[in-house]
Image 1 (tube, rainbow, N blue to C red):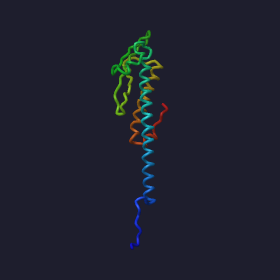
Image 2: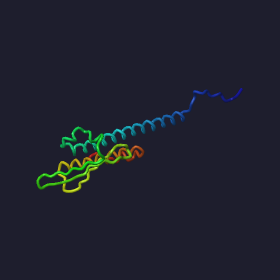
Image 3: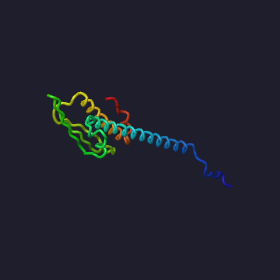
Length: 149
């Protein structure tokens, strides 16, 4: 007879159990981080598009939101109110996250206060969407994202 008893196939060591549990915990934590980052990226990309829609909201021919889905890659507006006159250019650019990021460029004059706030929000939401997308594979960057402007 042999001195050493045969090991059965369902026996395992405590070390193997801890290794499997550790790998499962790391995998589920990464999956949760990934889903949170994608959700936040999508949210901020939608807010960026909503800001672009608000820039052209007062104009009746653009109110039906068709211009964002089917429309041009850029829109230009020139507004004159008495002595104040300003012109801006609203354009979109594809990003690595798959969402279109909207940019507002002032061509001439100075934007009124309300449009300046929308422009700041437009820039901020676009940057947040990009940051959350880049934090997918660099989880430490998610710790440094500040959502308040």
